[in-house]
Image (tube, rainbow, N blue to C red):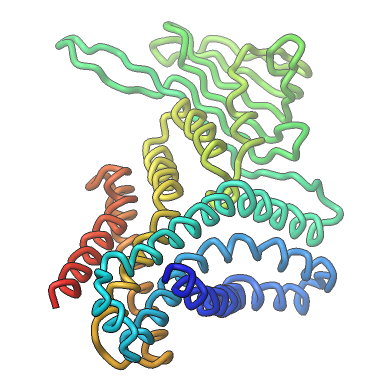
Length: 371
């Protein structure tokens, strides 16, 4: 029975992977690449390479959708042709029939995790770099703009309360992979002395663990905000944290980082103290962990809905799949937004759609088993 069900599930799963990947890839990448080929002169071979590099990222999302489609189509067909009724007549429970789909869904979840963690982020990042190089051949291949890094410290008030204040603000117009340009640093970390550093460029000196600033001015301000001193320099070394450089070097989009890289980025963001970015990254990390499990949830939902005695064609199954997928991603977006707003915890915001889907699938499965 397991072998028979597995062989019935495989063709619609592969069909779903091809269909959903084609649709999502066309919407997400193909039209944009064609526009860049026509308007920006992107070479066809580079466009094809980027298209193929985007493929693993899109397939990650097609695996859960294909699992839902395969289980729904297979179990609906078996139900409409009375094969499930025959199995139940032989003493096989509905739970045992669905177990095959659950086991295969676990296998797809593992495959989704591997793609989402090991393959898709690296391929997506390479696609971004390849596109940047192709469109900006005269400019440095690595470039970050508007590097903003604040540091905070806690001070105790007269009443014993703790207040969080800005101790240092580091800003650079751009970073080309070698040096920062157009820097402004406001330093309030030392008691009694405030300084403002404005510099044309700066490099990190790894041997001395200091910053080398070039062609700039240091303004010293007393604690009472009165003028104290102005120092102009051609070269000045300052002991400031390396963190802004680390932040610029490791700056990637959320879809270009695996969980390990996202956790490293989270530690960097925590040093800066930017709470909205910290919370957004925490939510994204939890979503990366929770996402592969939706394959199991969709497998349960599809097999439970398909086992309901009814006559459902392939078109109807596909339509139901689209509705379920849309509902899941809508709930994922809403719960993620609530988590980023601080209304829900990052864990609840990421896992709520899975919890809802699990509850719905178990409810449907029990109802079918009681018939």
